Image 1 (tube, one colour):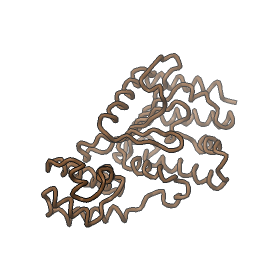
Image 2 (cartoon, rainbow, N blue to C red; image 1 turned 90 degrees about the vertical axis):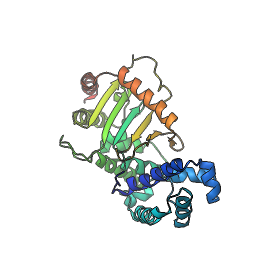
Image 3 (spheres, helix red, strand yellow; image 1 turned 45 degrees about the horizontal axis):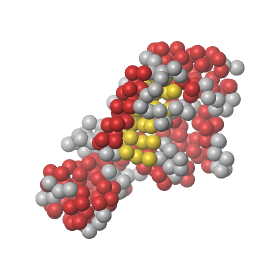
Image 4 (cartoon, rainbow, N blue to C red; image 1 turned 135 degrees about the vertical axis):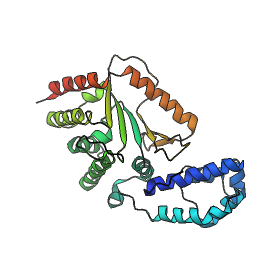
Length: 293
């Protein structure tokens, strides 16, 4: 398996390989936890990239899995992952602890599939629209609002080039928006018009697909709300990815294959029910004409 260079992907690579080595050795998580003297949850955190192993833990696990000769290699990779800088460090005050993990997932993603029922997908928001959304939290100071808006706009760098050219490092983005999102006001009419025009432009880029789920689409599997699917690059063989639910008071992650598969089926169903990308642009243009000042 090729090794990724990004610190976010490197951490995921380490976790995936530790999990695979355990399975290849024929041990369960409880057995590995018992050998290491920790809880099953602690092993789960190592194998889901939430935590990096200490050198003593790494040495014990690799010996238990029958590959002690790989310790030096793994130890070097763990050290490289620890020293890696998060791109959002300069905005640390704007990142809740639970969202830090999401940013790591997003930064390492090869593909993101997003279903939004209430607000524009964050990666497609204009700065003014994002500011209107963030400002709804009245507990935030003006400085905190500015930082969160900056964080939201800088996240869009994972989409890389904005000139329509292909970029092999850019993430693939597929968004399904409930039609009500196009009409739910955020900020002034000018802000909404700018947002819808921006959405139209972004929907034409090769690595971005936008579909609108019409109000009369009927019942579907995702009626409980918005969610995102994060898929990782091809080098992560056997990694099911992550399903993320942006809930109050904090986000929730699903990483077990069966859970992720459930959300994948729901998203596939939404793709079928939603208008085609071409018809979706027509719906966006209709909303734009109605909101334009």
